[in-house]
Length: 75
Image (cartoon, rainbow, N blue to C red; front, side, top):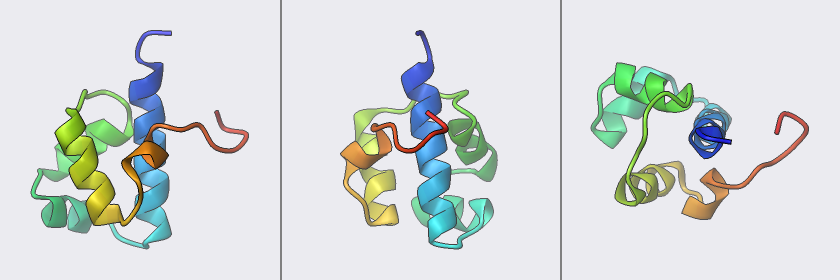
């Protein structure tokens, strides 16, 4: 469905960020984006480029593909 991948990336982004016990605001600062933009990404409301996906994954310390894959019962 349209937007499903966008929402999945958002869920995964939040999950990985929370595993690091870092706030949305602190993570946004490290990545170099505004907190409201990061929040919109996590809610699946905003598109992001592959370059941005790579940057987020790098900061999270995960493979970019991990942000694209469904995991667990919430998917």
